[in-house]
Length: 155
Image (cartoon, rainbow, N blue to C red):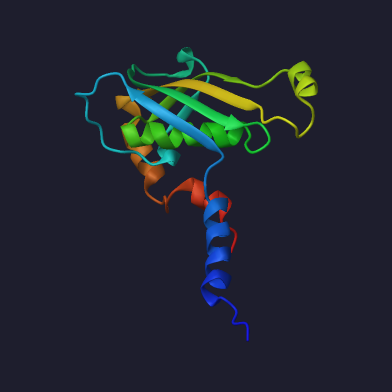
């Protein structure tokens, strides 16, 4: 008589759901001044700036951000959101986007569709804008948790 393995039947869907929650982008932040201790900020409280002149107040650079994702498993929004999350962990309330690089069309064709995993990379600077700290705190007032979790779980 063969008995169905109930644990495997129950645990497999849970494992699959957990893997679906793993973000497609990996980001790290290197603090520029390890002695600086700022309060953590939610991703919603971290503004994106495309150029330094768009930051309307004086700011302090607090970290260097590097992101990497797979072209077929992420998009630019995922990358920017991951940067906001990591910058917020450092206490930054803004990021200055330096670049997001994607493989060229020629590279994509040369690699073959679906044959090779191509990377998307991004760089930014985490900044703290003291004059905007109240706005950042207000933006986080209704934040409910990790954004990657909200984006990847559909119950």
